[in-house]
Length: 360
Image (cartoon, rainbow, N blue to C red; front, side, top):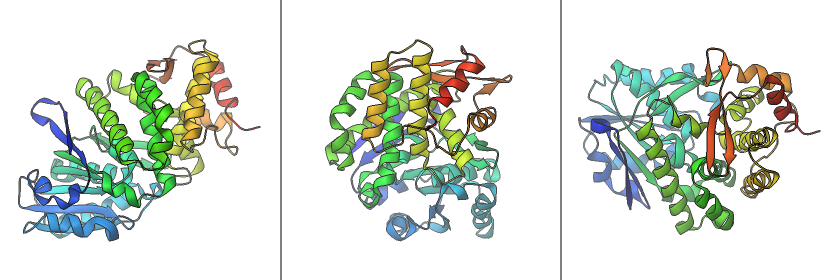
């Protein structure tokens, strides 16, 4: 087992990465300060892992709530089912919500924990590659709105993150690839050596090589932990973690939540960001080619959906969370391993960058 830390003073917490962590009940129980817990999972994860977590809770008072699976259910209506369970079973302020599942479950359970009685304890147990390397770490929680992704939420840190790599054995290939998008992101924004390693080891990751996955998860979590510790609420460098996300969120919203997986949209979005960076003269053709080739090797889309238009992208990106005082800030590349947050571009350049990523 690998143990990393997110350094946030008295709110610091560990990230455990290893095999069969769900079989180690004490690992979970030691982070539950009270005597009650609510496990939040979904219809896909519950038959696989809910029993293990409930057994790990031992004699603690506990209940579970099972959400429908899919990004299309990450909304206020479904969120209310978590509040219903908390209130019906009279959970108090000292209860712990355990998020057992992928990014949707983690985001929704986290937002419920942040808002129920103005804040209860939270443990993240991510079961997808994407949630293990990204969404479970850092405290971003929330739900989607018809007009924008993740526009309603809160920063709320967990007491611990348990990434049981054994759960990846049941992950569909498409979901595995979606997780690889966020892993590639870390190489692009600040880890050029890791990007090189990914070019060499992408096939091993796709084949679920245990050692390769462990290294990729560790480097990803360590990188995110460092960024979050330095900028918890995204006032500066944490925004770099959104490389490809402005374009990607527009794709998810425009296509309808759940049509493209988050990682698929981010993969295409990173290619769009690379093309725009090249258009601005910041990176060369070779850097774009390497970026697109690695994302394609991970079996992810590299172009925007053919059904979307430049005008649709511009409308959807106008409600992105990185809009400040009416100006959209983008995360772009100065080099592989060096990303920046910038508004140093024209509307015409942004439109052109979108246009060249739309299939002809």
